[in-house]
Image: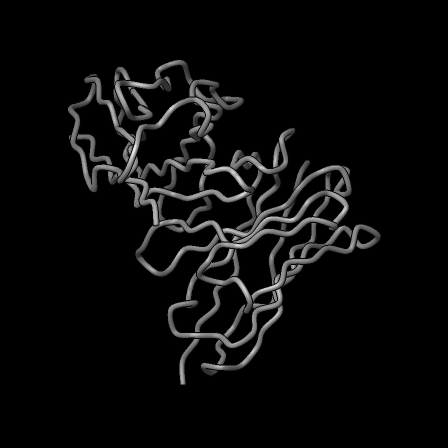
Length: 110
Length: 121
């Protein structure tokens, strides 16, 4: 069974840049997987940040960008702010109407 | 504005059943695919099930296939998740989520607040 991999945790300084990645236990992530990124704070439902690899959801600042880097999907946050501190989840479309989430990355801004 | 309101969660014994509902408003419900996504306490998100806009196509994660059934009543703007043979590992907050223009893709533009299901004896 294919596993979607994410860094368990990451730390960034305020104003800094961080890139979170989303990979596969076997194989490479491409745009064919329609990678989507969600941001979640405790007690709240997730909020879409990026969908279809690199499309920002409505209201998401352009500090957030999505891409394919090497064999992984990537979410880059530039000019990190304290309120970017959240859990970030990627999800990949595996085909045949099945989607799989990664384990999430806990981002700390300090 | 779009609203998704889940209900039906609670405490249930292992092996028993529970039905979740998700009342939708603020959009044309019958035009969109709908999904269920769950999150165990302190854990990550897990896609559970998907139903097409007319309800004729349904798909499930392997972890729930054969035990859970997704359905919808477009006349009532309501999505359902019938959960049978519940296990401790089904304990989670269950979210309903609205699909986007490509109904099968995991691009959910709206989520409900979730309903907690606890499976325990």
